[in-house]
Image (cartoon, rainbow, N blue to C red; front, top):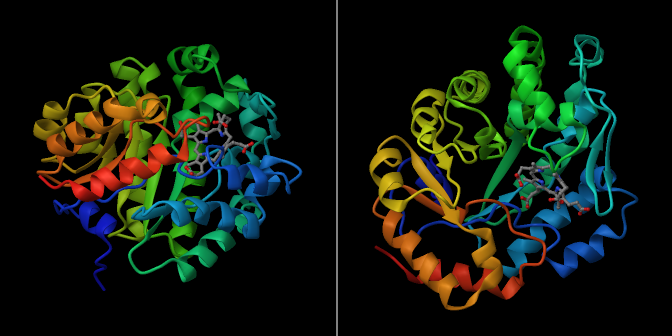
Length: 345
Ligand code: CP3
């Protein structure tokens, strides 16, 4: 059955008007009701693994804003947790992991049983899939291997990845073992999300832009391509969005070579380039600057109009260039939805 949900039509290549909209990190700390709900969990991973809370966090933004898609509430770091790595989220500090720095450390990771250890996530997906309204699509997601490996190797966020970049460059055979393992675990995890009702998938490669061209091809394009291929072996028609953030002109080869249905672009990508170079290959998603969303006012209105004007001639989904920042006033998000709904090309 072909769905008529606007977000899914856009990912099949239609120039849907008005453009469908959702925002990366639409759930979470910018919402007071999330901050309230969050107090009930002893830590963030527990929160993600309690279906009742994760379902509620997923729904919260949909009550406020007329979004076309819900994104499963979880985190990209559930995969290292599922592989047996020690992962903790500390208040005010973000994720802290026992770093993987050697072949021995890689060999300790347990691919068998990952999906069993992540079972509560699939329960959340199932509950959402059976209760969302008819026009709202459900997006499942995972981190792409390089970005997940960055946290696994560095042991925390907020770095430029000195250890991972060195390992990837100097000992590609060793590093490749970790990437292979992540491809396998991630593909299986995404397949299970679709099995439980996810209607589209996004692969977050937030740190893709750290790599020079040759390494980008090997550690960004190739692993994303393999995951798309593995998922499509089981679900040939599932729409998949790639997000190799800050890829510059390499967005084009990423889009061509991975087989994604959509590409999410950062706020620095020029509209005319995205329209002429990317839209002929796949649906473009983006790319409002999250800082401008935080500012609001005339600059916000002008930027939304510029993006919609530039991209709604082709297949397009309105989104940010990177996730909603925690101090963002909810009214600014409401304003963006209103503007996007009003404007057609
Ligand atoms: O609304 C949504 O987008 C759904 C949920 C979601 C979260 N994280 C919830 C979250 C999604 C899709 C993610 C993806 C994610 N997680 C990425 C890729 C996207 C990006 O922003 O680049 C990355 C790199 C992570 C890893 C991660 N998770 C970090 C670095 C942190 C700490 C910093 C931060 O932004 O909070 C997290 C924690 C996290 N993930 C929170 C939320 C709501 C905050 C935790 C809390 O409430 O205490």
